[in-house]
Amino acid sequence: MSATSTSHLVLIPSYNTGAALCPTVRAARGQWTPVWVVIDGSTDGSEVELLRMAQDDPGLRVILLERNQGKGAAVLHGLREATRAGFTHVLTMDSDGQHPAEKIPEFMAASLDDANALVLGVPVFDASAPALRVRGRKVSNWWANLETLWQGIGDSLYGFRVYPAHLLMDVMEQSHWMRHFDFDPEAAVRLCWRGVRPVNILAPVKYLLPEEGGVSHFNYLRDNLLLTGMHLRLFTGFIVRLPLLIRRKWF
Image 1 (tube, rainbow, N blue to C red):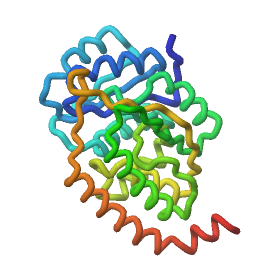
Image 2: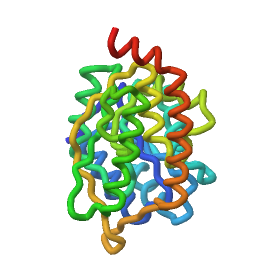
Image 3: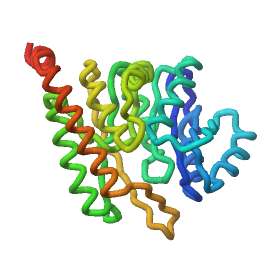
Image 4: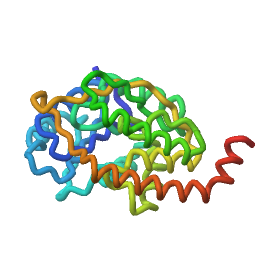
């Protein structure tokens, strides 16, 4: 039986996730109410069955965007709708079955205990994880922690996390970035700059094979170039904010 909240919702951005979408949403609905899904201009028809599900499920809302804008842009659209509806926090999770729906109550409880916290999932990888991606994320994690003066970001890229909705929306509204694959790490860094405390919780991650319904839109060259440019931009911001970060950390 799913827990119900009027302050915390599950927000799932989705783009061409195929057959993995509905099982992911069902798993989330089994743990939490409400669950909102933002269909980010999908062209694979994956939203059709989901819309049928929503007709019989008042705890599920499907938001359709006409064209693909990127993960961060889809999250921002959901944030605007959520805050207008009175929600204060959102738990984001991927739509492809990688994230553990059974962990939703634990993450929400941590957020309810500390409303100003950024509750971050720290991935526990199994044998399905591509070694190149596991090693590569260590670079992004190192930079994210440097840029926040080691405030404790356990993992900068794992998208299973709970955000204070108004703070995240404010950060995103003031930036032209954070609309694509760069969303997760930049959101964590900029919220830490705002004084939000990261809380880290271990969570398993599963990489599904194509025959299991796994879908990945990750492009090694494009997305790593995007991350490199993002960290260069954040490092510049870090230098500007360094006196404030030092004062906050040690004094």
